[in-house]
Image 1 (cartoon, rainbow, N blue to C red):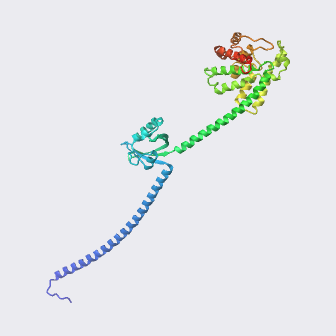
Image 2 (cartoon, one colour):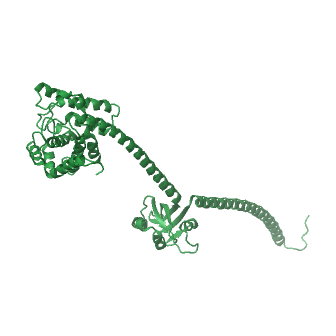
Length: 424
């Protein structure tokens, strides 16, 4: 079937194998080229898709960054990054706008410190020192001084960044211009203070009218056995003087304060308001009262108490009225328990009533009454000194003895004013 053509059979076989290998290699190359073409095509398509996706993401990031910057501009929030190791700081554009510095001006901690208001500088230095140690303080509000002398209020917040070993490496901070908020806060405060002052003035006016009405009624009652009614004015001054001196005393330092001193001056004139219920035949009797008459006279403290209690029901939280009821009811109690009506002794007697007892007795001794002459100041001082520990609180007598000259001056000035011609 085959012709030899004079060729070696082995050589023919080799040539046949080589031809087959060439065909197989050619086919393999074609397959490789096809696969490579497909792979390259797919890679190019995927690359294009990824590129488009990256471009879209970049646009989103750019827009997001633009939105962030715009939001920061609107909110007046800048930012800075502080490298703890090098102590170098970088300011954002918005921060530069807040500080009103040039875009090309170098950012530095020293430059920033020069802008801090002198009154806030120590606090900011402490904060900065803490940041350099990797300690994040609480947010802080302080003032900066611009180059033209204007003041801005800013609020700063901080966030600590660490490396892979947990070591602090940098601080990211924000700075917000809150000047407008501070100005609004200041105006609101001024408005509130003005409103409070106006309310206080109106309340004072109303209180003054009420007090004037009460004192007029008290003076009317007092004038039945005191021709001038100046007794209630003087006792108020005596009580105020003793309260002022008592504030520094260790036994009463916490009890006697500004309110106590103010209230006792206002409340002391109420001490004898119950005399309106005592008949003239007893109140104005020029001779010594009988035991029966004295029992009736003693009821003036309960009459005054009940009268003021009816007022306190309408004003339960009024410290002035409450003190007035204590003074009216207990100012005739004595330190040793021999007073009336309840026989209280020592510190069981309200402090305001114990003060009133000293003031009332001194003025009564110095004043002329239908049943007695006026005593000189020196004799009045002796009588009160003798009553220490029996009639009066020894602490109050001690204070009285140190200040009895001022008691005398208050009484003498009151008498001179009564005798002075109108307008003198």
